[in-house]
Length: 155
Image: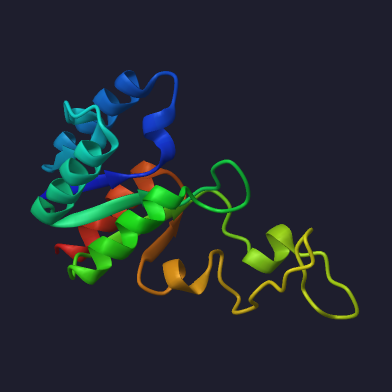
């Protein structure tokens, strides 16, 4: 299967080494990794178009939904997940912390779950916002756990 790899890992200092390890991991399971770093585009528009083409050519998406620069997943990854779901692709999201969102960022006030800015936190017992947690198959673990979960979709 052609698998699009979504997530903030492309911003790592060792992103090229990381990408090679991802390609190897997926190849060992009979899959081809589609990684945004593989493109040669340098403009924002070019990168966007190349990533869209990769998602459209994919058969599934694995998405790192761990927090990035705050309490929430990378916004670009969230877009890629939504786009993939809209295309009918299966998406497996992985997280290292499976606690409910309310337990991760909540600071209740008189029984109301609020974040540090006083904004209400949705309380559906999910580890992420419902718009990610419902359409994605969420696994608690790393990319390896997501790859293992992928095998349950294709058997």
